[in-house]
Image (cartoon, rainbow, N blue to C red; front, side, top):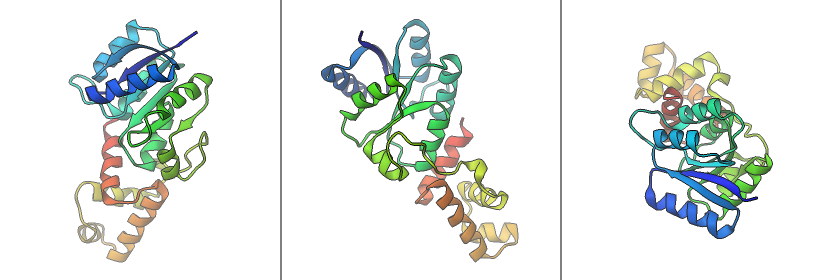
Length: 213
């Protein structure tokens, strides 16, 4: 029996490309498409499917996206395998997606043919990480992404990261916390290493996503 697949992405060209790749690979039947979080939830309510392939960031009025959307889908359909297709290149957020219930992660820079592979793995109950996700996470495919979560940071590391994500510089953080600049810098570096973050932009991206879930 064909795998029934729902596909969601707010970019029509990407949505069409994913659906075409699925049909050409012959892994299943696309039974519905959505371009907003609300549209996806309504589609899932009325259309039975075996695997969901969804974008991570899919803004829409009236409903949250990202981790919040994954949480809502998992709460309503706990047994539905979810493959996330994302432009995010952030090992810490990959960990959060897995924790939120995604069984497959495919980045949008990967070969589109990895999506059918991810669908087949998800249908079997196996985790799938696309090659680029796998390389960034630094782990072999189908293994847990062993980077820390925000809750695993020390209180001081957590404080530094949150202040930095709010736009404060290392100098400003040192002044407001009465710590030396070298200490603040070391704590920031330690937090980034634990989370698998490699740039300031990834800090903003990760903390912002965590606040919106």
